[in-house]
Length: 365
Image (tube, rainbow, N blue to C red; front, side, top):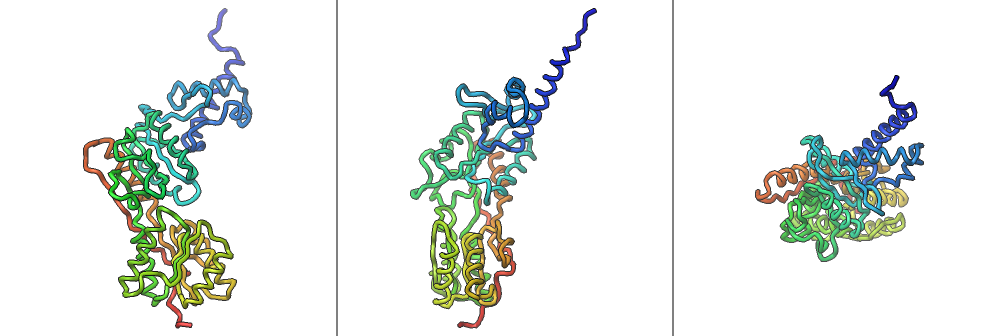
């Protein structure tokens, strides 16, 4: 008497394969591999505690579904091709997954998923070469559009960025655009000059007229903050130059001590710092010198990423990161739907979150 039931060993293998395929689908959805490439089959076998054949069968299932594809001699990559149940995929390229951009990414993902689309994320670690390669890979694999945070050189955008339309798919820049003269690209960004001016006006209302500026060197944000600081001071009838200003690629506690010494020598009662880390270092320097914050020195940070974790919770300028991500996805979706519609370039004004590091100006020492 014959039976159609599969041998027990076959059933077990099939169960393991399906279970592993489910695990891989979940990992892809959770962006566990932001570089867009799966670990090697050998690595997956070790990590999952299964045989190499089970891994190969599970990956075969994902290849059949169009979720991944194999490239001979290179590895297995997450696909960005359109699938009926997910809508089109959008490639997203960011320079960092640890500071500032996670909230932007969350906004993008929220807006895309609301409309049945999905995000394929790449992180470049500020490497222009990786950035260009990620863009090319996303385009080749069928992304319907791109949301990009490109690294800009001293002379402007990298040559590969070109003008709108040259990439071959619609693209929206995020936190770039205000620093690209007359760009034709659509963009959504923070108006950092306006954010800095808001910070200065807060200090002026508190009676501070001698204000310093502590800056982490940045080709994107720092020039806009300096501009807003100057406008705010000049609008109040003051010298547009801060009483003390310094810029370093990376500040140390010793650098902050020296900067604080200059502030004291110049009679400054407040400082605007880009970014939160630099503001925290200045607060630490004030503590070591015996200066009270905010009674003797008011400090404002920028970015509002870790400002609330400072030993004195920082008043900080807070860009609308999540909203910017959502709006970038919305603009891209509209561009895909109407390729000939007028182009959009939008800036969000950051707001000031007032905490414990700012107070009325002390009497001049």
